[in-house]
Length: 262
Image 1 (cartoon, one colour):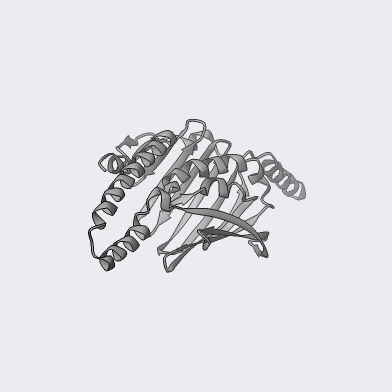
Image 2: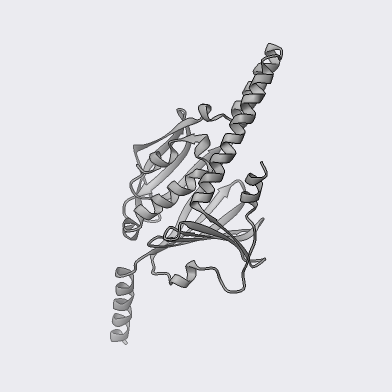
């Protein structure tokens, strides 16, 4: 019996030691119903399974090796596909159209009374900033530390135009993440195209984060969204998990359609 236990422990250790990827679970609270996610990471491949009591579930599969990502809706057995290049081009096109509309609106505002013009300028700056109005993002490592699920973490402060917009507690002790860090940062950089027009230098700023974020607190207006990692383990996920399952039908991306119709 002791030999069986010893062999089982040895096999478990070997599996962990030679795992090429990692798996983690996280929970988000603070904006609406709590959501949970399961994250699977392998070289050049990421899969995130989102679960929300309010909105049901969705799955995102990012394939850096193919330069694209898929969004799956399990309840409908449908998926959408978009390349990172398409997303970047669409966001640039949408930004140019928005800047043109803002320029025309500002021209019309010149004939408004001073009080009305001031009110309109505040509304425009807060909701539809022009490219020139974007605020630079800065990420700074602080001296504050704390422990989360057994890992020593260091606090990073994220500011936009000098105002703190989020806090990240980062650890360097998640060993499986070291081999995946460059892929994860590449994924984050490509996805930053979704918000880059409103946050100057976001991708470059986040490259300075050294380690794995165990907790992120994001401030949106007067609310906070806190995402905390609850489980981490080394795991080699089969390639089949990063493919579209059989029986799923492709549909047009609502994001792509909306941007095309702007």
